[in-house]
Image 1 (cartoon, rainbow, N blue to C red):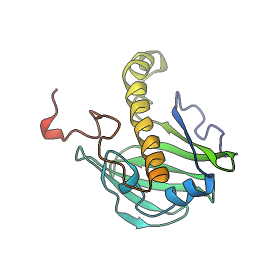
Image 2: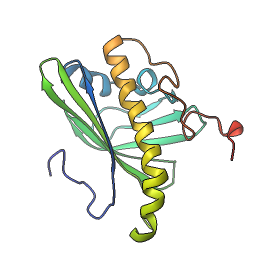
Image 3: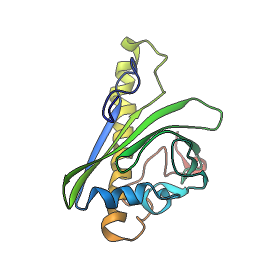
Image 4: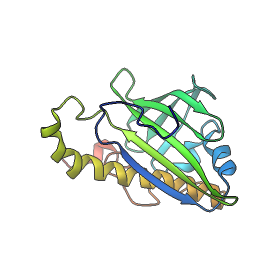
Length: 181
C-alpha cells in the first residue's frame, strides 16, 4: 500500500482537502510531527495533550473549543511524508484520517487530509447518500479547510492561528451550552 491508496476497502466517500503551502515539505513535516502541534495550528483546538509521541504508537487528545474531546491513535507513521490515525470519542467509534505532505518544488508543497468518517457507514448506501452529500461532507470540508489553513498560517507566519480564524464551525468551535438546536 502506498501513502495515497484507499486504506479502507468498502468505506464510502472519504472527505479530502488539499492545501498548497508556500514552504518546503520538510518545514511542514517538522511542524506536524511535533508533539502538541495542534494547539498553535488548529483554529478549533483548545488543548492538545500528548500521551505518547512520535511514531505508530503515538497517542494524543484534541480538546475542541466546543467541549468535545477526541483521542487520536496513530497507526502508520511515514517519516517526512505523513501518518494515518484513528480519531474518536474515548471508548466510541473512530474515523480514519490520513495526513500527507507532497513536495511541489523546493519551497512549495501541499498538505492533504483525508477523513473516512465512521458516521453513516452502517446505513445502507442508498440511504446515506443524501445526508452525506448535503450535510456531512460540506461540514467536514469546511472543518478540514480550516485545519489545513491553520497549519499554513502557523508554518508561514510562525505565530499561533487565532481561534475561529477562518470562521466558526457549529461542531467544533461553539460551546455545546450555547448551541442552538
